[in-house]
Amino acid sequence: MLLSSVGMFSRGKCDVKYDQLESGSEAKPSKKICALKFFYFSCFLFTLSFIAFIYVQDSSIAPYAILTGQNHESKDSDLPTHLPFLQTQHVYHTSTSPPSPKACDVQVKDRPVIKVSHLNTYVIGSYMEHRFNEKQIKIIAIVLRHEQATYSCVMCCDGRTVTSPAEFSIHSDHFNFEYGTASITCPINDMCLTPTHVAITARDDLESIESFQPIRNRDVPTTFPYEFTICISVMYDYKSVLNLVQSMEMFRMLGAQRVVIYKTNCDSDTQKVLDYYETRGFVEIIPWTIKKHISVSHGWEIYKSPGQLHYYGQIPALNDCVYRYMYQSRYLALQDMDELILPSKVKTWTELLPELKNKYGSHVGFEFENNQFPYTAKAHMDYEQDKWKNVRGTNILNYIDRVPINPNVFNNYKIIVNPRLVLKTTVHGLLDSVASSSTVRVNNSIARMYHFKNITYPPNTVLIRDDHLWSYANDLIPAVSKVLQACGLIEA
Image (cartoon, rainbow, N blue to C red; front, side):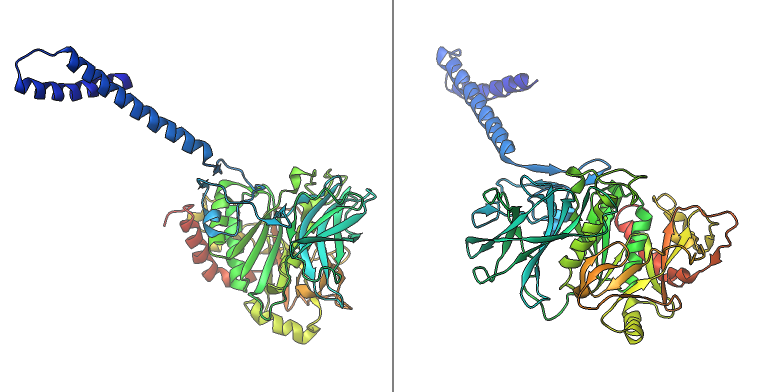
C-alpha cells in the first residue's frame, strides 16, 4: 500500500512537470523526462527514510516509565518523587536523563531500603540527632540478628569523607524473626561537624561505598509545618478503596494535616485515591520495597505466618516515620488505616490535646484503648449509601456494635505522641524514650480507639451499641462522595 501511494505520488509530480513541458512543445516524452521522474522518486524515498531514521533514534533515547495493570507496586527509582507532576502521571517521557546527584563523588540515593555491601543490613533512613549533649547521626536499619556485624560510618563533609566506628542496638520487639529493627549511631566529631550525607559499611570494608544517603533533620526549625501527622506503617496488597477514603476524610476531620503511608503495593483504584490525596499535599507515599530483599511475614506470629521479618516490616517503618517527622509535626499518631481515635466529648484532636495535657502532663505520650467493631456483626443501615455499593470496601457507618473489653487480655492500644520524646517505638507504645518520658492510658470516657475489622467473636458475646461515629456522618458522607467522584469511582 505504501509503495502504491509512493508510486501515485511520483506519477502526479512527473505528470505536472510533463504537462508543463507539453505546453511548450508537441514533442513526446523524451529520455530526459524519464530521468526526471526517477530523480523525484529517489528524493521522496530518501526523505521518507531520513524521517524514519530520526524517529527510531529519538525513540531509543527517550525513557518511559509506564505503570499499568491492577497492582501498583512501589519502584526503586531515581525519579524525584517529591515533584507533584511525577506523583500524578503514570507515563514519564524525557529526551535526556538528568544527572544523578552525587556527594563526595559518590551516587546519592534518597530512598529507604539501601543494602549495605557484604552484610545482611538494610539502611532505611538517616537522621541528625539533636537531643543529647553531643550531636550524632541516628540510622534506622533492618539487620540479620544473628550476624556478628561491626559497622563504620562514612560521612561526607564539604566534599571530603570522614570515617568513624558506629554503635548499634537491635530493638527488642523482633518477635523471634531472623531480621529485626536496629538503631545505628554515628558519632560526630571535630573533623566533621556538619555532615550532609552518610553511608554504613562493614568495619573492615571501607572501600565498598556504593551510595550515600542524605542526612535529614540537619536543622531544628522554630515552627512545625504540621500539628498532627499520622504514620501508617505498611500498605500491602491494599484494595479497600471505600475504607481508604472514609479513613482519610475522618483523619482530616479529626485534625490531621498529613498522612504518611509506607506503601508496597495496591490496586489501580486505590492508586487513584492515593494520587488524589498526594497531589493535595495531604498524603506522603514512602516506597516500601523491603520484600525485594527479605521474605516478609504476613502476620506477627512466626509459627502461624512464616517469614524473615515481622509483619511486612511494620516496626522499622514506624521508627523511620517518627524520625522523619520529628521536626515536621508537633504530634504523631501511630496507627493503622482501619483505626480511628475518637474523642468522646469534643470533635477533634485539636480540642482533645489540651484536655489530655491538663490531665496527664505534656511530657508523656497518650495510649488509646482498642475497641473492636466487627464486620461480622449486624449491619445498621441508617447511613447506607446506594451510590457507594459498587466501590470496593465496607461502609464503617454500618457497624456500631463493639466487642466488650476483656481485662485479662492485652489491649492493642495505639498512641498519639510528641515525636521528640521517642527514641524507639513499636506497634503498641514505646520501647525507649527521652529521660523519664513514657505513655499513659487515656480514660475511655475521654477518648477511645475504634477498630473496624473482619473478625469472629464468641457466639454468646453481648455486643455494646456505640454509635458515636454517627456524630460525624453528616460531614463524612458528602466528603467521601466528593473524593470518589473526583477519582471517577462513582457518578456525580
